[in-house]
Length: 477
Figure (tube, one colour):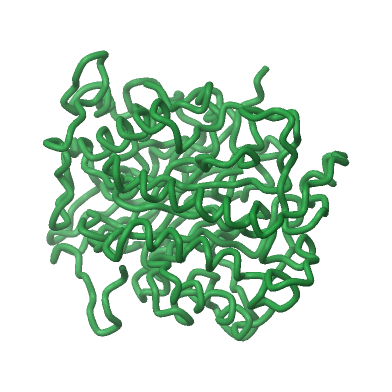
């Protein structure tokens, strides 16, 4: 799936180490109370009675969509908060806003609402929308629902919106129905509308570029008859678990060069249509990650064998993307240890191996590492409390994004089992962010259930947070 999560309803540049970006002088201290059971659904009004900004306060153009155009591309410069409707807060003590659930704990939320430099823009806070495949783009074209879906999160305070995975311009790139493309005039026009709408709502936007590799089956569109591609003719763990037997074709040097060029074209198009950055999907057992992992890469040439050889394909993609977009356009790389179908997989067993993997990618042009884990609070290696994003930052000296069950009490596996995930305290996350273990926080399922997640946390309305259930996947809202 895109990013860390294939979430579908069934069809039935960091500052230098000596520099810190401080938030407002007022220290907002908010006690993060547990959710008091399910609410009343996600209608076009929030439980507070406030109207959805995408439905109301954002200036609208033809067709009822947020007004587009470069003149609307403002609202978050200098760390501004954009157009936010304020709601009820908790009690105030000396300028500090607090929420009580019995007086057990108070957590300072200010670290989450410090600005952060992102290319030529300044993100208004550290909240990122994680990429999540939704499969709502027939013909590969994002439509009106997608425009409103992404803009809604930005209008409610999300600073950086990363799209669901978008397939690059290669015949073997797609593996799932109704996934959006990032090539062709019609699809790119749709993504320009998304970027303009996110900008009008005060956010920044970056598409995620994706090639599924050996996960693809030959019957899949938009190019039926084309088999999957992989570093070796080996079944992906996810396909093997699902009982699929169709092997991918082992990629030739020509195939490799074509895929590298397709990522570069996608990145250049992202810059051309007004996006603020681009993310390369290099995680979860899809094509880039299939080269990284010895279980799916059994090559004996310069792309296989040693860790340095196995990560060469990723380095070539990063270098080509960097050359295509220039030096001032943020390039994000999403990476993971775990794979779809093998949640215990590891490429780097030690910090030293992680450094050998990531540092050359930083040299090739990665600006930000997006470290995907199942649970952000779990240490990556014995002997240290640092999570994967923390280690990536320490080893590469690059900014990092953490992700993995942020704001929820159950991980992705529980989602597949149909179990709800309720809101959980953020004290661990905020403490790590305050000490600069990582720089940005990607929110996934919690942001599907609560488009105004950032707003609710900032205003101390955590008791209004809705749990994540399968109902959040039933529509693109």
